[in-house]
Image (tube, rainbow, N blue to C red; front, top):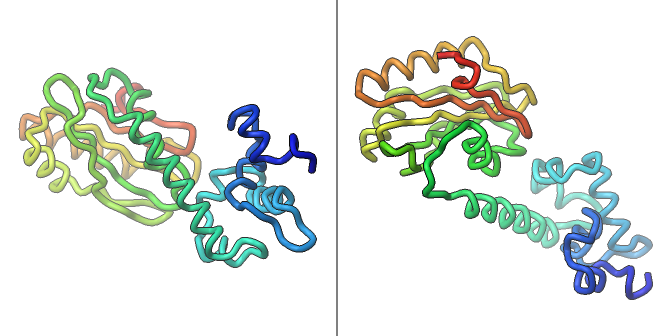
Length: 220
């Protein structure tokens, strides 16, 4: 490669935004191996997940480390880069402004739930002005579901003196539409919260780049 084609030099001259995913990945990998340049190694990694960075994020660390030319040290570098990106997104979204719509909730929660191969249930606790008090992960399940801990959700709200709560969970299968159990448990949570003078504002189901809002769909 000429100097202008080398990922590091290209980034310093033109900015990180000018690099392809493969070139950015090559900078993290640093070097190739005998018979394979670092760019070819990066492209091979991306080809394993059809070019999707989310696919790499979802890969088991042991599997990544077992790939020829990667190993444990480079796997650690990749995982650290993914985690820093995730934390950057979370830091940017910790807002004190009131939550006014479901898309704002989606933006806040997507970095926590994107790419997961299992279901997680989260609770957003809000004050009377709909400002975030606390965001809590309440349960972790498998690829096909997780339980909604209604007593735990109410207890959290009372502990932090929350006036409103928003329930969020993910569907790893790509379909954000609620199951019969989701609808049933949401209704039960709404009633339980109301009995304690707490309002359930919404239940958002996230599936990668899509979401379903119980409030928007008037499912209450």
